[in-house]
Image 1 (tube, rainbow, N blue to C red):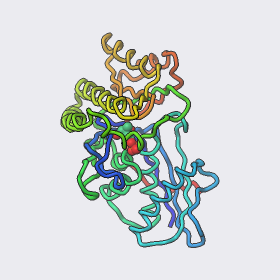
Image 2: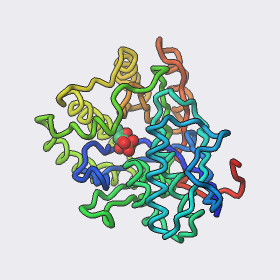
Image 3: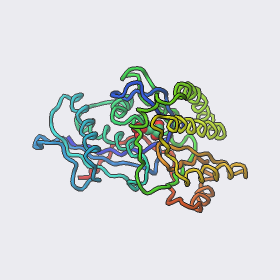
Image 4: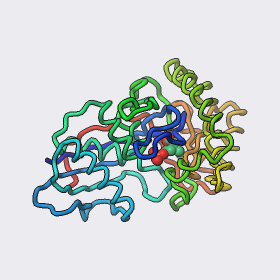
Amino acid sequence: MKATSRATSNIAFVKYWGRINEQLRLPMNGSISMNLAAATTTTTVEFDPKLEFDYIHPQSLQLNEKQATRVFQHIDRIRKLAKIDMRAMVATQNNFPMGAGIASSASAFAALTVAAATAAGLELDTRELSILARQGSGSACRSVPSGFVEWHYGETNEDSYAEQIAPPDHWDIRNLIAITQAEHKTVGSAEGNALVETSPFNAIRVQLAQESMKIIRKAILDRDFTTLGEETEREAIRLHVIAMTSVPMILYWNPVTVRIMQAVMTWRNEGLESYFTIDAGANVHIIVQGQDADAVETRLRAIEGVRDVIHSRVGNGAILLNEHLF
Ligand code: PMV
């Protein structure tokens, strides 16, 4: 009744922003991402009849009360499905710095889902695991399948899941994550998501995101970097327009964020092709082809205010490991 899983984070080219169902985390639009090999979470779950409560293991990354409650609620979903009532011990570790503003809920809930479902004795396929992970954190459903992944928005629980578009070795695209702040973002994605309908531009963004799905899916399959990059940038800007026009308004960028955006545009005009995308935070994700990655990374590190750069290749989906954290 013990299992360990490792899952990667992911970066979305078409982003999830806004939900039609808060509880089930059904999104307003589909989304497409690549898994990030360099940003992983490893989680061990053990169901134990001797435990009276659910616990976070002392040697685990320590979660605050809100985070731990969310983890235990997810374990509850899995217990219900497996028809067991044993309490669980959970340990988790990230291979990237916490508090650097790198979204960890995608890798965290993908790894938690696979570890807990396996420990509970459930035999679920990728689609079923993706559906479960989505209920823990929306973007986590995209970290279950491997490589380039599409989340079908779906109107019911069963229809809203992620699926592979292409495996990791299909295309050598890199994501360089420029860390621009030491602390966590101020407005979490859950809060931001809940505000979309206060923006007068939300309906048009949802409609345009569905157009972006077609364009980006095809660009990935055709390995058309220019189309992928241009459309990814536009889609990211539209998300931030929604955030900035929400009530109350959310501004995720800091001056370094903008400096990087401008630098990327300049490099592009000079012939070094790269594009940016930004999630619900101030860090900038630069998308670049493998052959240009080192040159872009060197330039990024030279920008004032960039604290660190994480260089990631396309990653696998959530996998089971034989070694446990405890
Ligand atoms: O699943 P959450 O609550 O971490 O939301 C993720 C939202 C974005 O990162 C902004 C976009 C996305 O699709 O990853």
